[in-house]
Image 1: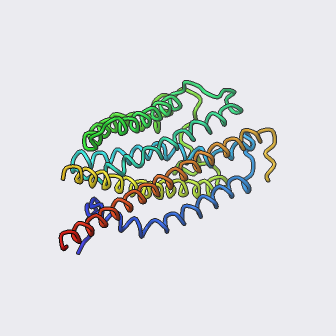
Image 2: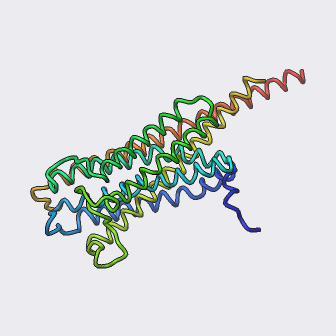
Image 3: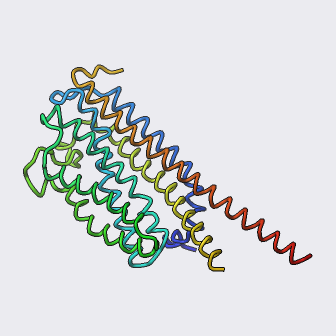
Length: 244
Length: 60
């Protein structure tokens, strides 16, 4: 019988499947992160213009990529909640938010540390930097809204709407450098065009780091969604006991 | 350790900050997960004990 993705909207099915998948994803995460970061930090040469600061690429680019894509994932799962009312999907969005916020902070910090020697400033109200800062504020707002509302279905509705609004800044963060041809930040680091893409010597370890950050997100997301499902079940059981 | 030249402070602090945030996130996630699992387990255990006690009382 063909499997449907909606089967994972059943918390029991999600818990069973995630339990089986988690050790493998966690193991792959460690392998990719260790290979990517060790290769990038210890075994890549300095850039002829940027010197050793080019090594910051291995933490800055993957975290920036995840900062945007985690919000996109939250957008998809929030839309599933709005349209189909599957609790697991909105709990996954809730579980993803602190991961996305952390990735955004890392991207902002490493960007500032990289920017100081290269641009001569820690911060500039550049379109991409500014939209990233606003994206971070949206993450904080999203997390705060979940905590502020007692009724979990109401919280899910309102945070999903906030997620739709914040998506504008997720898109802006990605394309700001192209939309407004101004500011200090460069365009995309990776390109399918071989001429525009970074040199292979930096590219391959970066691919490992990108895979490592994606897998780290999946690992943490599975653990955090399982935590949310357990907390929700405990809350429901306590409520049922009180009502009895 | 590679020779990071005049940018050693910048490179090392970028890695240090990133790894510190990632370690904190992983530790917090695992702690919350273990706490929620234990809370649900102890609640269900207590409920099961209460259920057994009340059915024993009913039988007596």
